Image (cartoon, rainbow, N blue to C red; front, side, top):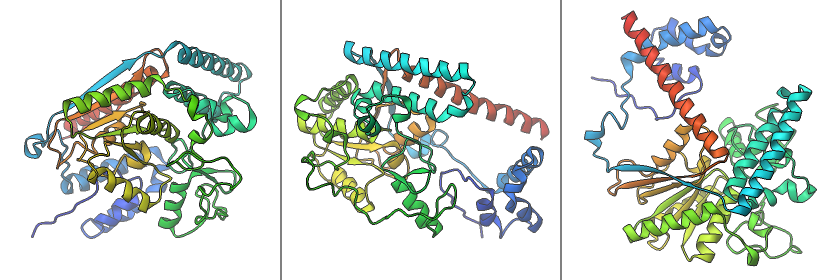
Length: 406
């Protein structure tokens, strides 16, 4: 009787997790070796030898990895076309971006001259994040939470990174000196069964049952259909100004409808505030029905959003954050993906595309990547290419070494 062993298409980040899966078929001494993966990794040579042994002596005989490219004939997936749309900022947007870039460059040079570059990685990341936001829409920087409170536009005012997922924080929660996404912290507490800070193990004092969207009864009315903390409640909607990227998206959606009157699309962005601006522009100004799916939503709200998108023929667009919708979703009802901003890791964008290009898809899949010329986004694309070459080269030369050994 053969052994059928299925594992998710998601990399394990602990060797001990693998050892628990193969404990009933691998030798005892091997299990003991890999159960102590943390100690092995403290010694580079021992850790490297252990990983080679794990791959060649155990996993190579057990695992069968098949990618979509290798099994394209069996899967019979429809064609997927990926296009990169490049636009240029208008005069106002470019002046604002250039001013922000020059200030950030001056601040960076100050860190270099003072010899404090290593101590300010957080601020440097914040400056880069703010430049990326300015490319999407100047409002993301002008009406940032800290910027409104202090009137300061320095780099520290940009969103911090989550201590769990290490992406730009969504719906931030602070229980000690560390900041996390609310959804990440709730998932961590539920999976670990304890309510302590993942970074310093101090007890959490955050109330998970609190409703952040209650608002103040004396505050101004909130934008209909948006949470009270939305960026739309900080701007004057009657003077709302669109951006180059939003206009480009509206044009691509129009092309989508012209090609296929029943087509649906998914819009991905790393910034939930930008998704709010997009939804306001599409739904309230252009009459395009859309729904959001972001990390701060409850499980019930997420299910409702997905059900509406899949079952309502009038709901054309699903607005989704990379972190919330990158994995574990099957959305083959859509045939178009719009990537509003490039991500550091090209694999994240690939996962987003795979939400619709998978078994069950019967239409031609079209992917549109939006990039603004002469901005930091072109640098991010260069970084993506370097990461691809690094990964491909690493596995190519490793394959050569393995072939020589055999």
